[in-house]
Length: 380
Image (tube, rainbow, N blue to C red):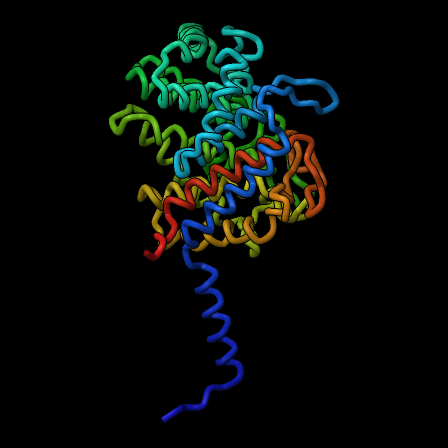
């Protein structure tokens, strides 16, 4: 016997079913196609990886913006090892002689971000000469007393994974300890500490530590800055051994961040540029959201984050990126340009183009690589 269902109840069942479908893990092929489309746009737009960037002035192609792109490309290569991806990355690294913008004594993490990819390429071909400059720079950083090089939160993503990868390659406890000292200085000392344990979020730099406030009276937590920080923890935990003296401290910060970002996710799956203040350039923003997807997906896959608590949020964010951020030609919408705060590099809209496109694509490829690893296997 069929029982009658009220219109309201029926509508509720329909909406519930739609919600369930929206939360389903995507197919591997769909995730991969999204990543390939976005990457193809970049490689087509930039056919020669040796060509400098020109934004107001000429800049070499191994600056941080391009370094982040190659982080994403190598993550894509891991799940989809096309020779053209390897060749593109190798040509870029070899052109720059596996070195850095200002040489082997450059303490600016933006300038040695590219070493993340140098190490990844070394792992593929085993040519130790590729690490000559990276080893020299690392020796300098480890054997000099400075610990406050990473005085803005972006810097830990640019520089800290290089330390972690070298820990994995060498087993050096000295590198591991110096990495911790520099991270702890950023977390606890600079500006009184850039990490807010109350919120589980990071201030971008000392200028944004309270009493600085947003227009609604809330602290300023910039989404991409926090995306950099969370992705850093992922990329460090991927590399360091289980018995590393500071591993559990990194895990604790990662889990605290996961709780922090969950509280301020938008209903459409994105995060505002200013995470607690939608009045200050609220709206979809692709780079911070991509980095959060990357981090949440990795945390779920490795068991550091409970799937029941975080998977829906991660999939909502991924679904939002796929539906709203990828344009027909493969370029990305809603990418905030370079800067240091929510109001910089604006507006980030459906039709806007950021000053540099490369880092946004890198962030998206990182996200896709981890969502892919959680995706539904294809039916045979």
